[in-house]
Image (cartoon, rainbow, N blue to C red):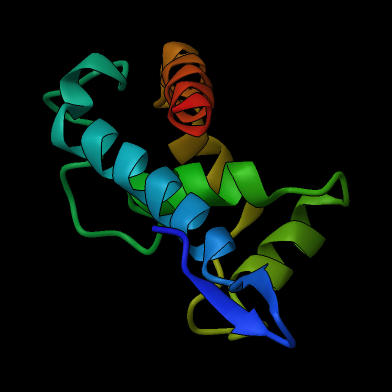
Length: 116
């Protein structure tokens, strides 16, 4: 939903547009979680236990990476909280449970959402 406000006689787009885009991405990630059997390599075992790095965080962390070292990316994603942060090995193990089609689906779905 895009909101508009009048300012000095002109229509100005409010800053809710970026929230709308983020919500669309979150909705697509939620649809992946709801249908995770199609997106994980071993649906009977993968992402069934309650862990520090569930499916949604694994996807969001992967998307948020900027090209720094893995330890730096983890440190920034988890907000420098030593209790919340996971090891590089834990992230790699969780990420390896995802099929490559997971991100293909996410990118195509997100792109088509922006086109509409």
